[in-house]
Length: 319
Image 1 (cartoon, one colour):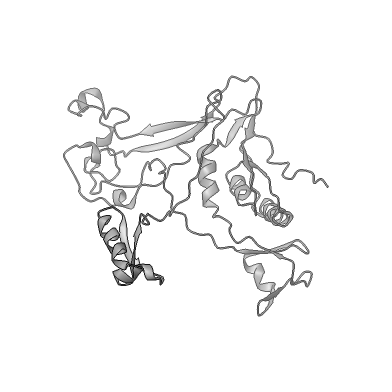
Image 2 (cartoon, rainbow, N blue to C red):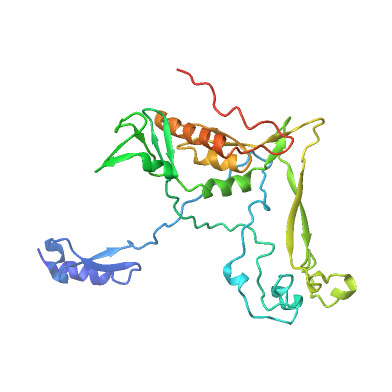
């Protein structure tokens, strides 16, 4: 074989983008290039995130998004901003520590900010072990009673070593909590299931008048940022969004079609919602049931005032 032809071909196309010379695994094709082979178009970024989709019920029903419940704290850079501008620019207006309020910080954590589209969630270590043979759940310090010898763990209740059920890919509870806060109202109409929307009281800042240059703030009464009161948002109550008569409050229902070990259900109960889980694995169903029943027994989450009960929790089992 004439290796020079391969070399001439490589030089002829060397102008193409996203090309890289790398070590050859070993063949006569790269002899003319000193053991290197030209690889094209192999570079790309590593995907380091997972998408979370928000589905709605179509144009006829619209969708619900609770901006206030999903608000997050300000970035540390905003809270600790010490530039102390005194020129009245919008950047520093309305913050509790702003110069216009007599403070030395532009930041302060009052008011928060709208939830961002990128979340950083830390893994959540498991603090429980479940024996599927006898149905006993050991949580926290209770795990010390489990007898361990090498890689074997013996259930102190039934003495079995082969009945343990675990899920090695459970997501942190913070993930469903954010989705539930944003996508569901705590209460809804018992007749049509329309969500109840928050009533937001806003104080301080420019309260919607920040479109002008602020030269006439004193004349228009737009001076709350200079009275010592920072920008705050408070949810005072929730109002109905439908016209149903004589309807009562119901806790909103969260559906998780891949229930797993019940992380979504635990998050929903902690936020005062009901939850419906669908799970294919019998083992995971047993584990989820044990975790949820323990939370209901010990933490005793309550439904919103004037709403129906959180149950029934479990549907009847069928053969």
